Length: 286
Image 1: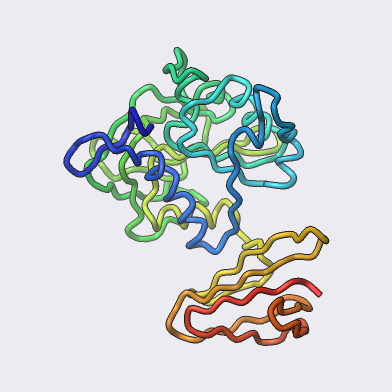
Image 2 (image 1 turned 180 degrees about the vertical axis):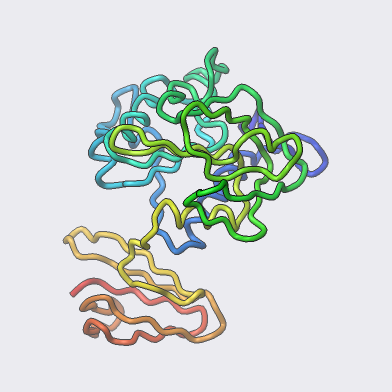
């Protein structure tokens, strides 16, 4: 995409940062929604060359129940098949623009897109378009996706044609309105959701909240300026990194017995934890 980008700059020229402009909104939406994100290289999940072990689709579905795949333009057959198997095993696969459009040698595939995943997704497309300005979106009737007022699509449109998928969001436009913006379909024990555009910030957040209805940090409801990221330490304890992204002080309550990694102080469950302006505190489970 850096050499042959699908997106344009403001003056109409090729944008070498097209991949980042497709990928970043999905990540930012999860961040704004307070959801945790882990980034994988495709070969960490499935390596067609066998140079690394990768993960079995059912194992990935258990450990990572939502897998968002935007902009994976170059993908071999086995990787695309792995994605379908991940959804069939119980994972929620989210396909973003340009994923699977080219083969392992970057040649456009001679098949309907999303390649090798049309049956699983319940949609296909062979027309695409660039957007010079944002398009407003609306939730489809009965859609579980709660789009905010002013939700938008940006940069790109895939002309998604529904076979047997549920439409979640639609474009408000006399031409692009003939196609859905976001669709979803059950596949085996899991689900495949297709996002046929680069979501605007509010849309991306609403999408993340629908994909993962409950924040996984365990800290419950947080104030707007506070985020929590957790991870597993080598000794098996959980680490908690708590940020306050504001000039105003904030407070949260400990979800369990914690130890402050800087001073070793034990903080019992339910204790109020104070955060100064632009503060960060790091804890481990006691």
